[in-house]
Amino acid sequence: MKYLREALSVYFIMGSTNCRKNPIQVLKEAIAGGITLFQFREKGEGGLMGLEKYALAKEFQAICKKHQIPFIVNDDIELALEIEADGVHIGQEDEPVKTVRERIGDKILGVSVHTTEEARIALRDGADYFGIGPVFPTKTKLDARQSRGTTLIQTLRMEGYTVPIVGIGGITSENAASVIKAGADGVSVITAISQADSPMVAASVLRNIVEEEKWSE
Ligand code: 3NM
Image (cartoon, rainbow, N blue to C red; front, side, top):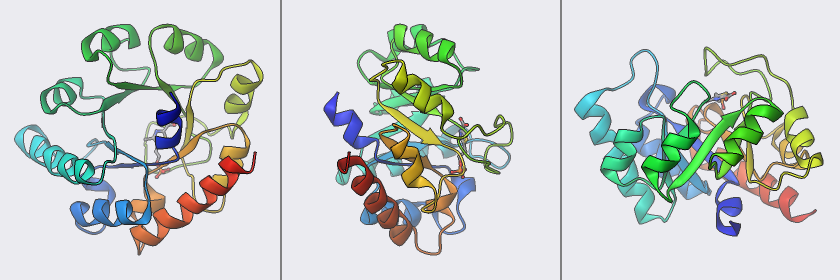
């Protein structure tokens, strides 16, 4: 899974409600800045549904394809299968990992985990990588749990887990290095790129920080 570990470095997540500018423009700028993976997460109040959601997913996917950026869909397994996305990301409240794995075959499967027990089960049932958060306080996910820093990332590494991990929640250029130092393979961000004056610069700064930290080990 060398490829996945590298692809997780700067993992940008976005839906139409997360940006100030046109989301297509934001994604293009983020790619120009150096994001390594993209997740389409169309959720919450004002989020697109049905055909509109499908159309935006297709647009995002085409841009990602052109630049060889893996395209992952949050939660919506039907959509991921229909458009042949590269993977899906699910939380603990979604369909069980095992059944999602059966449905998506060898597509990438990311799972949000919050405890060592959830990690054990997710890995056993077919997760390819873990999303662990919120590492820092976030206003983006209204039902996010209490932030707990990088403790779980460190614990899993100490216990010998080699599965690729990304930290998520409140990550910025100020704190990204600490997430990699704790043992993560990448940082997953919404606001730090989607709300930046220049998503390109924001992505590029994050990419440099993560690469420097990853290869200095
Ligand atoms: N999942 P921002 S925190 C989508 O803890 C998401 O699992 C989280 O957004 C989790 O980079 C979060 O703007 C929001 O803080 C991340």
